Length: 165
Image (cartoon, rainbow, N blue to C red; front, side, top):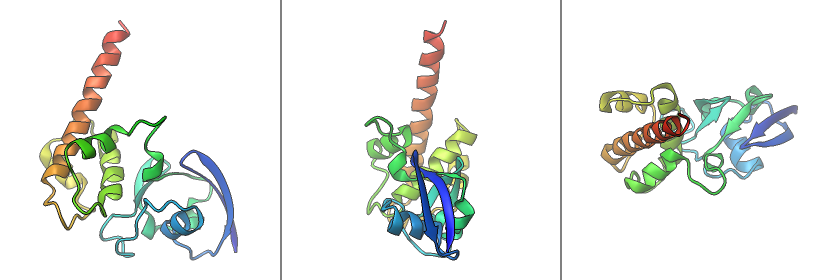
């Protein structure tokens, strides 16, 4: 067994884990973070995407011991003070899901994409999400949701800048 300590969705946790335990299984089975879903266990689908120290990773491709000392944000940790994260709100507003299985990973990857590129083109969005698969929607509403989230963030930033003058 290996002892790990990390922060998950703002809460400090410490556990003894088998060194071969995947982060996705630790999050789901030990911490009950079932919003992080197991899609393929081969890092092909991206349904298990979480943020590890602020960067998106496929948690089926990371050992829990590799996250020792890190901060992990899951889909459950995206909302703040009862308010959906702008990407979550945009996915809801744009109906960017069908069965919903890929949605947590898509949202996590989209948030990471928008942090790096706050005003992406449609092509940049599609490229930024290419490691996350949706088997239902055809991606049109997902791309629209990312564009909506980008616009909402730009409007919020402009409003904050205008209020600071």
